[in-house]
Amino acid sequence: MLNDNEILKLILGFKVRYLRQKNNLSYKEISAISGLSKSYINDIEKGKKYPKPDKIQALAQAFNMDYNDLVSTTASKKLQPILDLLNSDFFKLFPMKEFGIDSEKLVDVLSNAPDRLNAFISTIIKMARRYQIDKEQFYRIALRSYQDMHDNYFPDIENATKTFSQEFNLNRKKIIPTKKLESILSDTYNITIDRNTLNESPNLSSFRSFFSQSQNILFLNKHLSNAQENFLIAKELGFQYLNLGERPFETRLDKEASFEKLLSNFKASYFSAALMMPENAIVKDLHQAGLRPRWHDNLVHRPLKKYNVTPETYLQRLSNLLPKHFGIKDIFFLKMETAEELRSYAMTKELHLSQLHSPYKNESNEHFCHRWASINVLKKIRTADISKNFKGRIVDVQISQYWETNNEYFIVSIANPNSFGSSIPNSVTLGLMITPQLKAAFSYLKDDKIPIKVVNTTCERCSMPDCDNRVAPPVIIEKENYQQMLAEELKKLDRNES
Image 1 (cartoon, rainbow, N blue to C red):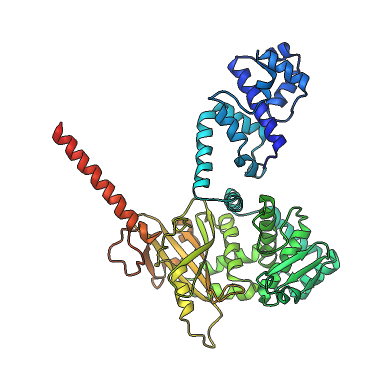
Image 2 (image 1 turned 180 degrees about the vertical axis):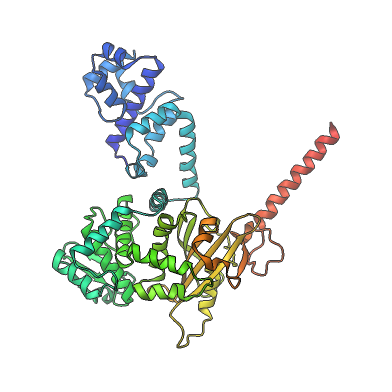
């Protein structure tokens, strides 16, 4: 993200480079005319330096133009869109550093293909405005892209958890006791835990945790499960041990969250999950599970108990390790919630690795396909017989074949009876595209008892006939068919007249 001063440097740098190239001047030639060194001019063009007025005057004279025209953020009709782009919110919001983009690269790209790049990014900005994507959503999208760029695997954090475990003599072959995590937090970082105060305020009882930096207190909600509590304590240890600067202090991030806050939150969460579920242990478990010829729900229930983690933490941990250790990179993760009537469903989290996979969030109030495992498992949890054998969650698997495509996914969905602090059930889903690598890794994919379902994205975009799960008419398909019919009629008319 760039501040206003950096934006001004970039604008001047772009104009100087553009004018130098337009006049076919080399660095040596412009240096001789202006009296400025070649390296100094190069730094100006890269957006590293903003010269003093006398040096700007020398450059303006070298280009035979007025001083004010050179420093102005306005320009000719051809250049103005580029300057508007540089001065837009896009570069003030976009975390360029995390994506390996520096000012030199930016000026270089803008100078070499200004019209096309400007049109492309301007389109993105207009689309964001059209669909009312706010700063927080933009940051979250950027974070997901950052995860995808790294295949959602971060060796530096993996290594940090190993070093942390060695420093504090943690036995990673067993569940780390809550008291041990709490004592490290207290003895090493002088942070105490308060499990009562959050629930004393009705307005704060929906928060899972809050860290008070002034008091060095980690406030935890008393209604957390032990797995949730361990995760949050380990997450706070991640903030401290990784020395993450700009960070959130509450679990429910505010609307003013910056990209740095979101990134720090992600790194601390990754640290927590990696600490509780060691890389080598999970990979070994997955290899052993892959040898089984048949699927069984205990392939999910067992690790949840073994590592004392929530379904969401476990499935997201798999999304870290499957790309690295199994070459399985076409992955999506979803979290969904539903209301009491089991008719409307909301996707509250999503992550796509390698590509944008078919089940994705839409902003058009369309109805998600009710053939999805993530929706079916929510229906099952609502009608579940809460008997002594009930494990507190329901696991569902299926092979999803996407209608009118060649895409198939192995789907694991886990439903919880309610979300934290409410009676709304939620489900978390991991989808793995069925590829030769996936088939080689997991023998149970050949299990003929795993249901196979043809699915789609939303009812409005589905042409599947006689669907017994349809909750809305295929209005978008009908509109497309009508437009196609009009096009065919016009072709016939054209042929008749010719």
